[in-house]
Length: 389
Ligand code: FAD
Ligand code: DHB
Image (cartoon, rainbow, N blue to C red; front, side):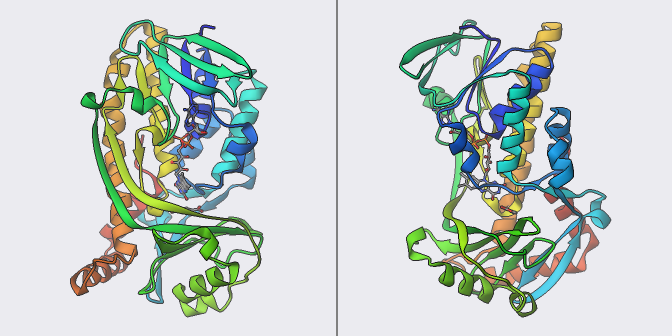
């Protein structure tokens, strides 16, 4: 087989890249290790930045989002029960969209099907070859057959545990990492959300987040020690702990019910530089991970895709590789901004085992600054709603 761009990974970044390139007349093949049902059953991010919303529309995958997504022009922050609002619209003139990653992925698969894109689900043993030559290729197994896919360029969109980043020789990679001493236990429940707007709640018992997917579907999280396992947490234990971390007036109106999904995600900041080696270009979680507190993971994957797509269109339309040569530096500049924001939100809102009184005062002061200072609110709102691409 031959294609122009071989895309490893059929998560949000691989599918969006494939969709945008196909619409620009550039041929792609997507290789995804898992089944489509498996990819679509993963409950992950819920908040889309303005730039993400715009790019999904541009990809022809925004119609359902525009009907079912819920625009939010603010969020609530709480510190041990005291709550205040950040008005994104007033602070920076932008908003976000509540629309689940599961829905985004479904819409992208539908859009890819509609244009007859080539996607191999359950592709195993994916391996990258001759990446630092002008004639790279990818081998994989599908069904009972081995395949070879020749291409001009490989896009590594295969997430943190994928093969693409690992194909770059370790001596050419520089990795930056912070592992946080806690995870998020998340549940999804068919109950009316406790708040129309998201509540990020800091408390002495630990962090909690009240989010939602739609008027009858709530997504809630609590900070838990890394040693906790999902099996340790009954629904009742989750609700009790979640309620205890919310401001009293919010907790009083919480409607509980059985969880329909429950999982624990560890928190990590990670960047691998550069995001290019030879003919291989990394996008999304394959190159970087943010802790979820700023809702940046999916949105960062989308901005990488935007930059790579622009560079590839330039290459195929004009023959110039200037965009491809500049891709890594351009993407990393935005990645590090989102790293900083996610790290600072995480540090401000969570209980760290090693924190003492000084750190606690710093958290209180950061939150007080947001309440008091229009400049601080603007900085937060600009970052939360998404820095421009
Ligand atoms: P992925 O979504 O990881 O997609 C990569 C794809 O590549 C997967 O489908 C995988 O099956 C496939 N793949 C992997 N290896 C191979 C291989 N060898 N060959 C072929 N295919 C392969 N972000 C937020 O903003 N908010 C959240 O609440 C949030 N929660 C999260 C919870 C979890 C458990 C995780 C893991 C992430 C979460 N994120 C969250 C981050 C967000 O979901 C990611 O940033 C986003 O999915 C990145 O998209 P991606 O396409 O780059 O990577
Ligand atoms: C959701 C997840 C986040 O990490 C976040 O900051 C906001 C919302 C969510 O899953 O809804």
